[in-house]
Length: 113
Length: 109
Image 1 (cartoon, one colour):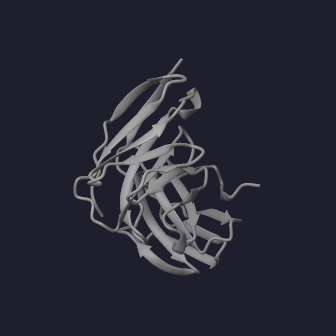
Image 2 (image 1 turned 120 degrees about the vertical axis):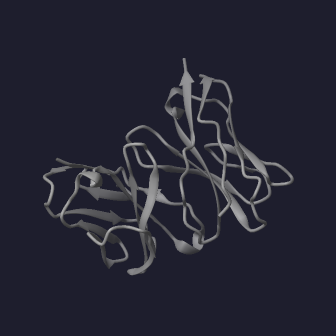
């Protein structure tokens, strides 16, 4: 039973395409996140949703649109993919009242050609 | 949130204790110290956190100095599987978890 699962694990696509990454957590958490890890291995927070409501939106191009249909899911849709979007994207979750103990998924490696 | 400083890399012999230091001299009274690690090709993993007191769990111990300006993560008996990048993060409750460069720990046989 994977606690935080992301699909797909690998995504290779052409510039200009639109793609989605899905994330699901079965931990009963109320908050979910997307992080981006670039080629230099820096992990940066992108978005956070609490009970389906956006609470953190870092300086991310509006080509990136998170969608949370329910508390257990946070999907990331990316329009008009660019070379610089190539990175590993991690989903995470926690209970907001429980501090910053986040559970991370295993990542989606996105390669834009 | 306060900034942290960690050595970029450290080596440790298998079976020995790994002591990973972190400086956070600008920490404020209500900021916690969190430790995560990232094993190659995996997502980050929570290890431990603390406010003032030393903490211990099944993975590690966290020693926070009395003035709270620095801390040390201790892996008591390092194994090859502990090879990872270790991140020390200081933040308020409800703050954003922001990862720095961390310490790349190599556990050698």
